[in-house]
Length: 203
Image (cartoon, rainbow, N blue to C red; front, side, top):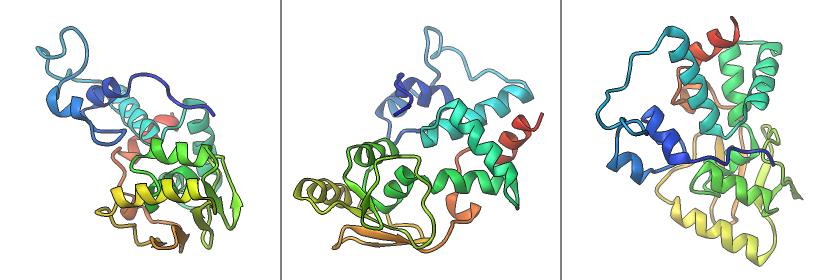
């Protein structure tokens, strides 16, 4: 499973955003990493640099490598509709992200681990591919095993204060959730400027 394995706190500090979940390092050291990070303000970037930073933020947010991100963009362009909306929907409908939105993990990384370790089923079948594209009507649930249900149940307790988005229905007692529809951009509320990302790849 391809994923970013480098230091996460440095990435969060570089962009000034908690990309990988709550970050104590970002709270304590809210300045760029490096020897002179504390003394230097965030330097002014070119238009290309700003667009590149927005793309990197979106990529790191969903845990997608560059090659895979380009494939998502190509698919978003191929589909009918607004390319930016299509791209966000493709990323949002990944199984690891759907599991995260349902509360089956307290971070996207944790949700990806839950999926990869075969604790999640889609429509009754075990799926361990984080990039699996979910669709409306899919039922995502904890596998019918004590270990899987205990793990998902523990995460659901941790995420009790985070309500599930309107485009899905979660039954915490049954450790399952159903996708009602594809989310719209306003519901996704990305941390990156998606228009700059589209302009970057359209050059």
